[in-house]
Length: 344
Image 1 (cartoon, rainbow, N blue to C red):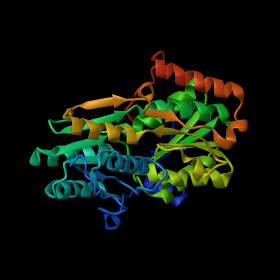
Image 2 (image 1 turned 60 degrees about the horizontal axis):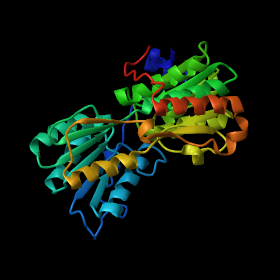
Image 3 (image 1 turned 45 degrees about the vertical axis):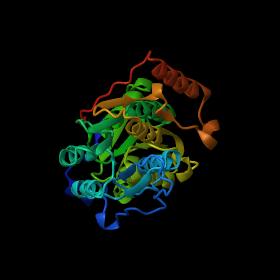
Image 4 (image 1 turned 135 degrees about the vertical axis):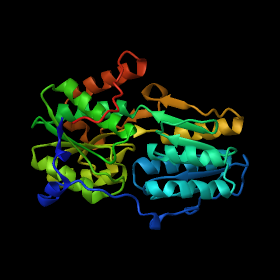
């Protein structure tokens, strides 16, 4: 793996091969908006969702929001959400919801874990759900997806399509739940082509599309002809860089084909709505347990999107390779390594 960010930030900025830092602007937070109150509150539960970016990002955060809509519709919960939360704002957001009488608070991302433990100690009757978290307590549960499985398949696909033997991958912040995707992407690529060069960059932002775009441009300038990402909302910038350069990209979290129909080969899909519904059903049924729960392709939580209108651009042998590996992951005959250690 070639680590573009081994260069100092100043050097990178100087040659416009940048990756920088930034987080969601809490001044743009939206709380209790977007038709998120259910008058027919059959379950009696009040459920709040906290996310790091926009709920209409066609990716990571939209998946969580769609889960919130489902629990509103299917269980009659009263719901609210706050978007564009920076890490420094999470404790306050959690505290506000807990003090307002919300029964369940969902934090969408590993970065919400520490705050769930902290605020959970102050509000023991409130249930906290952290998606992709690494924490647990009596009233705190983490729902972890095997996102590395999707990353592995995207890496296989990227390496199979690459003609330059150089591909790139853009991530946001180096949390375990994101590092495992980037490492999975590299491992999948190396299975197909042991000599392929995988360039990587971390932008330190979940939302900054400009930074992700510049990181992807730097990789393209260095020969990458397929770009992958797990950069949440910022990943749209990486996709746009690939689109403008006339090369391929892979999507993450959501079927992102609509963002660039002639650019996105496929996407890793994380069925977050399934997790959200399961978590709320556990609370309703009295089965909530403060533990770390794991879900992957075998459970139908991690999936791979169709090739859509690029189907004819992908050789049949590549499709067969991908479909066979997916089946092996599902039936347990192949285990994708879950490596959460950043690589240099």
